[in-house]
Image (cartoon, rainbow, N blue to C red; front, side, top):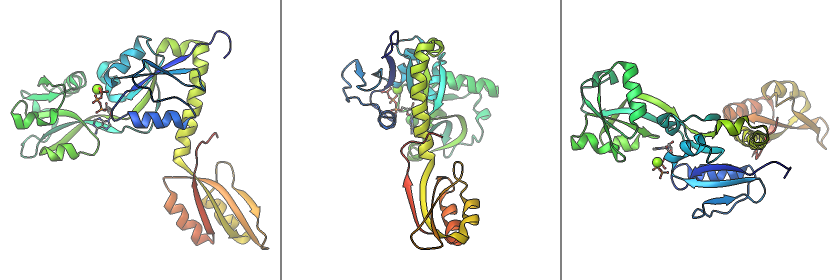
Length: 291
Ligand code: ATP
Ligand code: MG
């Protein structure tokens, strides 16, 4: 480690919906650490970083006050806490939405119509801002959990709660009528750490790795055989990062084409490649991708 550098600290959720995604992202960028969650700080063996496991609700504050330099947490929590942190990168996991839901048999069809009624939530700050923006005067009932049962208990006529698939809402005879916020896990930094050149260098090294990992997830490596005559059409279909690699095969007039394609339009591309004359198509996942 260069003189003057210090170890970075990163806070992540100890146990919950973000734990697996966070752990596999950190391991996926090559960090090696034990799963010692009972320890206060778990050191990475091959990177100047220590991991602090905590409740997700506390992570924005840890980052804002400089207890840690970095954190991985749902954007929903950052917004709710109004934490002064730098949002560095969305991480492509932990997707969910904060929604307004009412009982299936409720006459309420839009959030504005909740004026004068009670709304239960664990997100009072986000809920208050949302209704203020709408100009609706609702009475918020703050609950720390099981918000979805509030309407059935007669505590409130609507809720604002997180949902990913909507199954908990359906299970409780509720329907979604509006979205307050879309969320996913994000990497956040303490603003002073981020501005400190020495610390920033280490953060930057981490971000290069994370970006490469995220990019890798969006692409696949593909190889195929094709008659040379089909090359112009194939190149049009898969331009590659720059241009595809073309290797002659033992059989005269045939080539192998290697390139990278976006996962989004993966099946459509394969169909077009086959139509163009490609065969023996092999598709492989990419672990890291540095453009
Ligand atoms: P903790 O003990 O750390 O406070 P928690 O019970 O408050 O945990 P989890 O339920 O594990 O939190 O959710 C953590 C985060 O996962 C949420 O803040 C949100 O960003 C994300 N998330 C993804 N899908 C969902 C979902 N279906 N419901 C709730 N949160 C979800
Ligand atoms: Mg929590």
